[in-house]
Image (tube, rainbow, N blue to C red):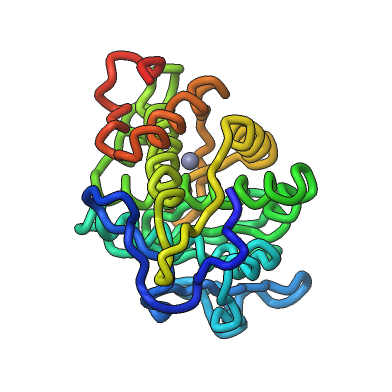
Length: 291
Ligand SMILES: [Zn+2]
């Protein structure tokens, strides 16, 4: 899934094409997005930035999102792509699940201090339920792009954001708790939480491909099944998505089985084809194979 070259990602509000409920816009409310580049220099004194619960921004560099205007910008520049994707996710979920506050995405390199403790880039992309931020390390994204290249790399990055935003929604619905209460086994709550996040990513993507920009043009090129298959397999091969929680003052990364590739694909496609997050009730499905 890539942005259409002329799509307007910089200004105005978009509306979803084809009627239907649930708005999705890309472009409005730039101020709501915090896409900070947090760099912890290796060899520096980490104590200086490890004090609080919130990610430290004293050495953070805000990406200049005002330079991101068109789909071509989003296709060429990873920061613009993340900006446009976060705006799209935020607008989609604000309409689809209004009680959830928008999530922030933090792009970091080397290491970062989070509400869940300190994380290194070895952790991969993750969602911290304590501070409600999505953490993405730039090396992971470069690795994805290197593996798939071009359009494939772009969609796999967008899918990762969509999946992590899905965990953010689960933080509000209460579904995240299932992963802690039932953490093991192929039909466990943990696996179901991961598959639901894939389905949520699909529901967002299904809406995003129907969304028009402020000028009435479609924002995104349509996705093929091959695009989705390669992006999901690359993202799960490269990264070991995890949710971190703070336990006894230490960071304890909980890495779970995410279900098989077929199950992940199945639930993503269920969300994508229905474009309806209500179709993503993996937690109450009689089997994780009921996609
Ligand atoms: Zn996950």
